[in-house]
Image (cartoon, rainbow over the protein chains, first blue to last red):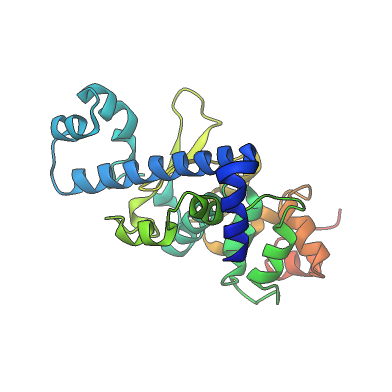
Length: 75
Length: 177
């Protein structure tokens, strides 16, 4: 954990690049979380309408972004 | 495309994708297929361990990993992963998808997002599919060996693997003219 503490100090103050790299990692994590939750919601029968509402986007945008990831038994 | 793979080969490709993602890479490259294969060698073991492959993959001067970066923000990546509602390492929820408009683009899509394959990784997959119906883990290994300029081939060579012999064992030797 020593390395993390050191890195945290760098991200918090001194080193702006470490902070930016942390934000990029967070953005990737967010994308992964969103994908996982949409896949899960669809698997449980939640409508695209409801999913889009919860994500705060239009139904069409949610569908365009995530529909290809929904497993339909195909390839 | 995954319907043309054995379940084991499919699991290996998904594993390679997740390994790429977890090391902060944006794409799935063929060296991660080597790492995924090394966790459980198909056929006779080459004696190469995943740890040895990892050591070869480590880019000198590479920054801290995702886990450490997120920890600086007070985020515990492992705890978040534990709370994710879908099993990200379940091969059944992943697909390999070829773009209709750009057929050279192949992407691994699943609950952890979209992971595009590099051209080299795509070639490994394509050679494997051309060799086996369905493609096996051995076919993936053959696909990797098919291109001598692959990074994974160089790694195996550096780790002391006798490549011609390995190819011979796989029945993958070009006959002398």
